[in-house]
Amino acid sequence: MGMRTILVALALASLMSTNAPAQQGQIPGRAGAGTLKDTLAAQIRLQGFSCDRPLGARRDAKRSRPDYGVWVLKCSNATYRVKRAPDMSAKVERLG
Image (tube, rainbow, N blue to C red; front, side):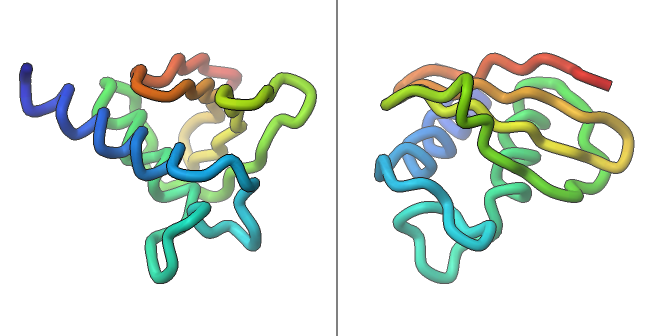
């Protein structure tokens, strides 16, 4: 397993540690951790996408399901839809 795969797996594990939605932009179940937008930005960067400066992240309630979170990540240079399931890398779609 490569280092990139290990880092993506760790990022996924930390975000999927609880089914509770993020409150006030914090990562669920992680007191004192970085914000959700920063974590999602780091994850998509590991997967080869560009996010110069994360501006915000919001959960897409219509597309999300239990154990399958969908987020819209707005960066200074692009907007992405990030689909996340446990133990898998994110599916990233550039929106704009």
